[in-house]
Image (cartoon, rainbow, N blue to C red; front, top):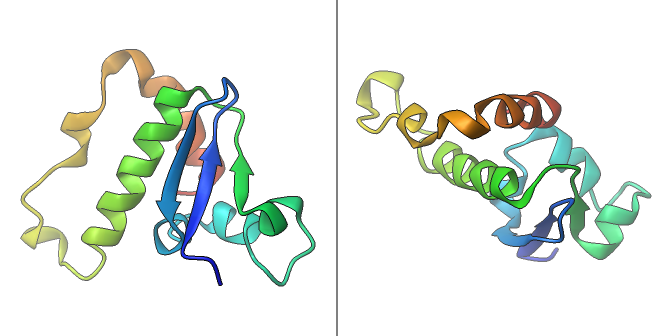
Length: 101
């Protein structure tokens, strides 16, 4: 099993992330499942139809989600909401809905 996968945006921007981080999204997990016959699994690259800035923010959130997976909500001092710029909020919401995160 490869340690890293690539998330590729519609505008050609790529983010290499640890496989564990990508697996925090059920959609990415299904796309990158090595037992499935998807092209993404063979190439270890998930091509997403979002701009690079959105893919970068998705990767940042997946890292946040993995980092705080074992914490109770009351123990988390850092709020991810403050990291989202208003001008990308709607597109980011669409990506989050698609990726089920």
